[in-house]
Amino acid sequence: MIAFNRYYNKFNILSFSLVVISLIFLVFKGLNFGIDFKGGTLIELRSNDSKINVSSLRDNISQMNLGDVSVKNFGNETDFLIKFENNDNKNIIEEIKIKLDKSFGNNFNFRRVENVGPKVSAELLRSGIVAISIALVLMLIYIWIRFEWQFSLGAILALFHDVIVTLGLFSLLGLEINLSIIAAVLTIVGYSMNDTVVIFDRVRENLRKYSDIKIFELTNISINETLSRTLITSITTLLALLSIFFFGGEILKGFSLAMIFGVLFGTYSSIYIANTVLVRLGVSQKTILKDDDKIL
Image (tube, rainbow, N blue to C red):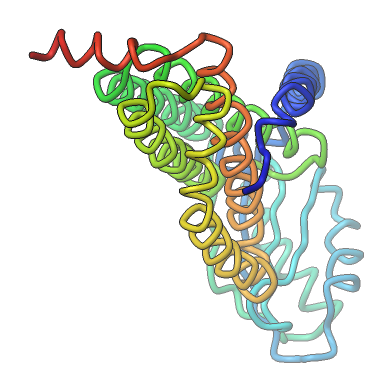
């Protein structure tokens, strides 16, 4: 049996430090919002010449003084994605076509052009925040009804930790936040809660079984009993996400990376945050029996 409880205090300090550092980055550095949230133009190109690469295309586009420009490969090596901030020039797309034709010949097909205005981007940002907030509130309501308040507090803190630290990493690394990242955060919320609930169910079951074992030892027993299930779920999920990250193209990298962070933090927090809350609040068999009496 692995003695997870031996490291409760050390990992609590680590978790607290990570949350504080993440909040500092989020407050002072902020997030790198993509076109979805700050407005701009997205152009999807396909080249007929395999010799054209990202570097040459970026150098060419940067000469047009479009501001902050992003040029990336996605999918095949001949597929490119160009993003730049809002531009007052209504003919900018035509000017880009002329510029590329002069530099590379008639070798580009403009497959998609999307413009996101300031009002639309602001609305998308509000919708993303509302979606995450509603998901968190609904999760909290479920966990509050499903478990005793001590368990609910543990799940809430674990959930808060996973979301904040994931966003803090994105802020630290300067990674772009777009709609796919919002989807990833919502998925992280569900994944983290699922991991925590599995262990909590076993803790409650063991509390009813063993009246002479203290919660410090009982949480460790419960974690070990559910460890194989937790590891199998996490490893298989990570294998799928790593495949998407390495082979899914540039567009899916942000989503898969956010999910990888979330799965790792979710697995960690369900062991070292959610359970340590139960230990510190001194949960015992009486806690469970009192709740059962109320239901009866």
